[in-house]
Structures are given as C-alpha cells and as structure tokens.
Image (cartoon, rainbow, N blue to C red):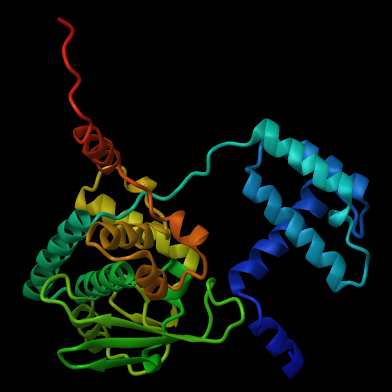
Length: 320
C-alpha cells in the first residue's frame, strides 16, 4: 500500500469500510446483481428486500452502492428520482419504530462495579492473573465508557499515549477521529476523578496491571492471562458487555448495546440538572436532534409534569 492509499484508508472508519464491502458483496454475490448497475435494478433490489431488511440497513446498502459507482467513475444510479420514490414507499409500508439501546442506569453501573470489585479481590486472593486482568479491564471499560458517554468505537480507539492523568483531578484523553467528528479534527475529552465509581482510578489500575505504556488501551486477554498487542474490535464490545451483564445477573442483558452507556449517562445528566448545552458540549453532539435521540423522558417524569400542571387548576364549585 503506497502513501496515497494509506491516507485514503485513514480517512474512512474501518467499520464503514467493512460494512460497505459487505453491502456490495450482498448485491453482487447473494442477489447476483451486476455492477455497474441501473436505477431500475436498484429499485428491484430494494423491493426484493423491503420486507426482510430494516430501513436503516437498506439505507446503508444504497450508500455503499452509491460509493462504489462514484469511486469507479460511473454515474450514481441510487440518486435517480425513481429510487427515491421506491425508498419512500418502502418506508411508508414497512417502516417500524427505531429500536433503541436500553440505557445503562447509574444503579446498574453501581451494581456491576460492586460485582467486579468483589471478583478482583477474589482473583487477587487466588492469584488468578487472567481473571484479575479481565475484571480490571472490564471495570475500566464500564466506568470510563459511562462517565464519558463513549460509544464502542471511541473506547477501542483510545491509546495509552493519548491519555494524560492529573493526580486527584482527572484525566484527559485525545481521539483523532470519531463518528461525531466527521472532519477528523480530533478532540480532547476530559473526565473528573470521583469519590465513587471513579473512572480515573479504574483506568490507572488497568494500565498499571497490564503494564501498558503505549498502544491501544483496551485489549484482548487470553485464557492464560496474556494481554494482546492489538486493541479490541468495536464489534466485540457489545458481546463482551452483554456477557458481563449476564454474569452479574442483570435482567435483559441482550437489550444493551454500544449506545447504552451514552444513553445512560445522558439520562443521568438530565436528571442531575445539566442543561442541554452543557451536555451537548461534554458528549460532543453537534445538533439538538442528535441529543434528543438519547434523552427520552421516563414515564414517571412525564406523569410528574402532567400532575404538576393539574395541581394548579382551580377547583370548580360543586353543583348545588
């Protein structure tokens, strides 16, 4: 790979490259479509999968096919008005409510952290290095992921040399790019040291135990307690967290995803009185629409708002 290709590869997230390649493969191999293709074939492809694939999946397939044509110098058939109309019709007939990740509530974080603390002490007593490393890493993943509202790609892209700790105050980590940083301008993320559920002490414990001085922060650990040189894959983080939650005995662990920590933190911040502007700046949301997708009002809060308004209604005189 020459330098131009290296820079082109670096400009796009690895997850995007993989998903686009899979989408093109699905069109060519599984559906037996020919590339380059026409708008009529794109419409037929959409129609054939309208009842089996989610709207977001179809949208991603269109984006991948669009990219393929542009990259290879062909006219983009996905931009034809007929394709847009077919897609609009599919949304009307097959649209379903977006399935959102279950938020990770602070009480659940506390419960998991306590469980991990107990297992860390047990592993130290038994001198079980593999278990000690795994539980210490998972504790750091959980607490830093929650308090920073990180997604899986942000957690796995953290590098030790880009994390600076100030004793007693907190840490600052730098990410060169993320999903919310479309221009790859880079951003520093600060996180304070806390009296409870502290992400800073959990991070320090992990990098010290694993003897990490550079490279990916969060890595695989084999059954013999060997820490891999490579970082965790973003796709592996959801199964890892769900497995941990299941071990702890958290009900409905399958409902959690890589967005659960961000949604949980956003809900905690809202309930703790953060204003929307401060929350958006901390998490990195660029627009209110993005933020509101994470800020659902609970049934209890909604009822309280209704009851507060009802309590101010004047009493009506009774009929004599």
